[in-house]
Image (tube, rainbow, N blue to C red; front, top):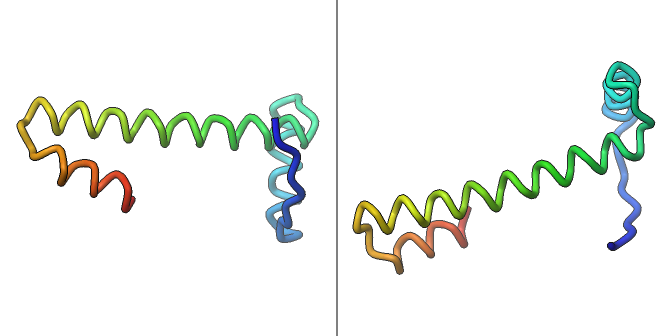
Length: 70
């Protein structure tokens, strides 16, 4: 696990704080969950794209180029 400091604009910080409170969570774990879900979704989307490209017989070189340049 890596620890990083991030800068969040004040308005976004307030918005995230409200969303975390509505979800019944503290802000830090709420943001960590959001980031982790986003990262997993990105990996899933890339895997899905490559699998679909293989099934449709799109040249894999082109499919891999698209994934790298998303």
